[in-house]
Image (cartoon, rainbow, N blue to C red; front, top):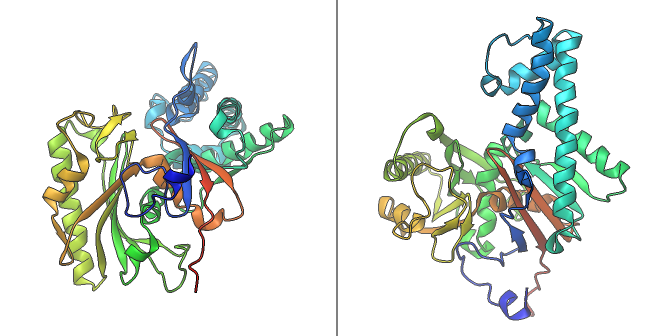
Length: 357
């Protein structure tokens, strides 16, 4: 990234490569091999496929604790319960699935760290819905051990905020600090391949100016993957969620900044359109006739007596940004989000100069 580009940081820009605290070296990388996209081997579906194979061994002996229930319908809590309290063979099958998945995740990390933009990565933060389970945490821990045994000097750390909240909290880091001063909170949106979540992120700047104490004050979730909806229906539903949250904030005297921070899958263009990578969303979000930022402003033109501004970035980028207060000692770091697919982003921490007297 050139010096000229670094010095252009001013107002928030959709899909910006230069943010207040970091430069984004890479995001939404799609690595392919003979089997398809490498990232798919570290997705939630990849773990389910591995577990399904191990369940066949249990079914042969009639000891599958899940019976005829499809693997993709088994919840995280069920898996954890069997792992911790089930019979030894069933628990062993789940442990074996974790081991196989960890080997695949380690291979994915190896592929990423060979890329030019990723070679200096010191730390990888692991987020996404799968990380939000004990099964995911064990897989991350085992992956880190595998990499260290192979002499790969990179730390793997589960994202500190719950993944459901990290994708909202990170939105505050898209904005320069001066835009947040004098406000209690912002509206944030996390658009995913299965869920759309909107929330009020309480900034708590007096407790921690670096947003380390930021938290989700209120949120709403819509599992759009369960419904057959069109794109405009989805945007209408999101607009209603945001309006409802803004109303709750006003009622409770939570002062909102007139901005909506959005994390969304894919490559985000400067005008707020989505270049590619939104194929799992309801309808065609990559159409040249659709602009997410404009659509949200149309549905919520004013927030707290101010004209609404919208800033959009890739969802993995936004989730990774939630970790900023905790990686200050890292110069080169990245994020992998394990969910419907494998989101990814690589950051370089910026040295922000202080104003001269």
